[in-house]
Image (cartoon, rainbow, N blue to C red; front, side):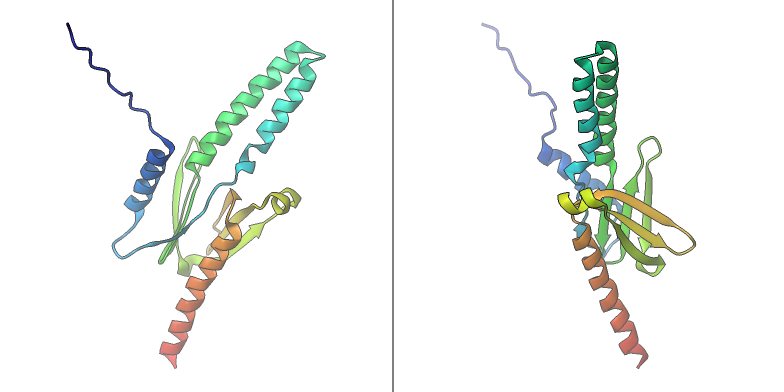
Length: 176
């Protein structure tokens, strides 16, 4: 009898993916820096894909070729939204804000608190209803970064304000 060894394929579970993502975040941190809050991407990032898919089904009942074309577009939009969701990163640490965005050109931006003028939230009606917002980091020197579909945007801004206001109060008390 010959023994057959069955090996598990290297399939990454969602918890392993989160560990990998967390590991890449930890590589960006400097000694003494701790993660205060991490932004989450809302599921509404897929709404455009769902709308085009629904349109494809409706159109396909009348014009099959156009329906297939729209279905192909919906699949490409799904891939784009998935990649965007996996790449987007918004992390608040006790020293700075880290942002990763882009698909073909992935940019990693770290903004120290002293270089951030404000954090703005852009919310349209769907954002109010579904509970997400675009976070806009306004930096010095006309630098701004927009992170779309952030699920915990209000919590992120509150945590940032809490950190920076405490820092400002400490500086003011030292001056007195």
